[in-house]
Image (cartoon, rainbow, N blue to C red; front, side, top):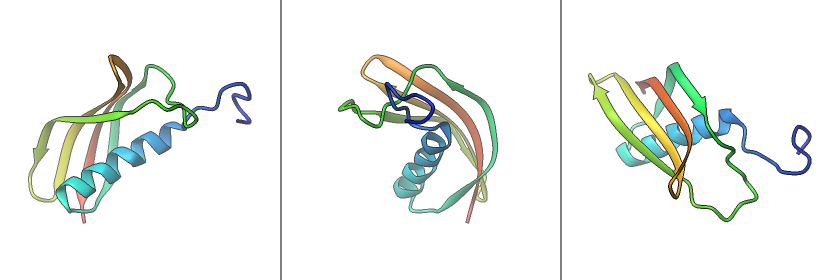
Length: 90
């Protein structure tokens, strides 16, 4: 709330970390970020909102130790963020 006292927003680092943790839960493999590309925050993700945020993963390329993917974060019809990332599986 210090940066946006009238409306809190979720920091971008938290959105990226959530994408990693959800991927890890789905695949049952822990991952860590190697590289982030084309990270775009299109609209605010509010921690105080009742909105449901959906993380969609596509173009996943897994060579066994390194995973590249594109992630879209949306709420309803509104896209909030787009991420392209490369991760290392632990």
